[in-house]
Length: 415
Ligand SMILES: *Cc1c(COP(=O)(O)O)cnc(C)c1O
Image 1: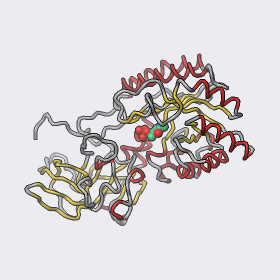
Image 2: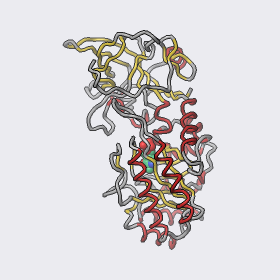
Image 3: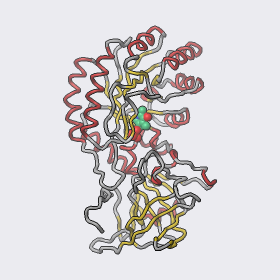
Image 4: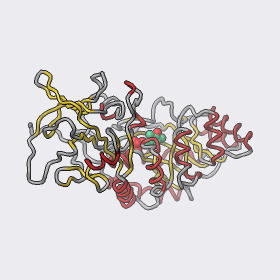
């Protein structure tokens, strides 16, 4: 193998014992029996807890941590997170229901997303959660529904910033966007929100997602604090909550390195006293999805066939893009790259260099898009072996076309 070829960041969250990956304290082969079928997603609660604890230790204590439920809306995961974070951000009525079933207080749940239906607004207002307003129209509809219900909706204004998060995996702010209200238009709407009788709670400024660059995140956070201070002058009430977004990424592909939190933490520590001077009493929250749960999950699928086509080995598995669209490279990637993949029951035993062969791992769907690993060096594997896709705890089943080819959905377990 060419030594200059970029490799995946070592998977340090899951250990192997006697050549078998351990998940939730159990060998993967036994977990597969426990689940009863493949494919499945397994999320390791100890990895999630450790991640949150490490993040809290790294960031200033005053920073509140919100979990973005859309990253992993499995009810058991959301329940676990309710004891670990300070708030939830949901983006649909179904996510709201899952969040409200946990011990998280309604007042610490915010509901964002363009295109909220009247019925969803009514559910959220009745529940007493915070609405993240995405447009003037939505503000007026929320006020009217509040009138009808005899309740005062509590609202954040979601602002589409006047800057972009450079080199983030997904830009969600800056330029023309369907999210939030343009920063230039925000002063006007903030005044109207006061006149509409809405309970103004604060601002949400989210600029991007999946960034592995501390410098990018530091820049975005500095710009966000500046924007928030400018907008605060127009706000109808003090800013109780300033949600500065998140965007912390995780390494998925060869050559990517984990985010260095130190510069982010340093700047936050420097900014917080200035924020509390300028905006006394304002709580600052960051909202994270994949950073909290992404590395804690694996996708497990069994090899059902091994075949050779013109010299290239294909391992065919019982699951693929229908369960894990992102790992197939079809969820927003411009150039397809391999997720970290292993043969879970043939992990390298210490001191033994396993002989690798270059294979492609493909799912069962009748489309070449259904590829989990394209020409990747893996230990020799055969029918019955378990393929593991790491970094699969976020944007898995709920972000995949489960009905494509009308196959069974994947099971999900929290272990
Ligand atoms: C999707 C989303 C997030 C979570 O993004 P991650 O990359 O999973 O951290 C956070 N905030 C908002 C507004 C989102 O839409």
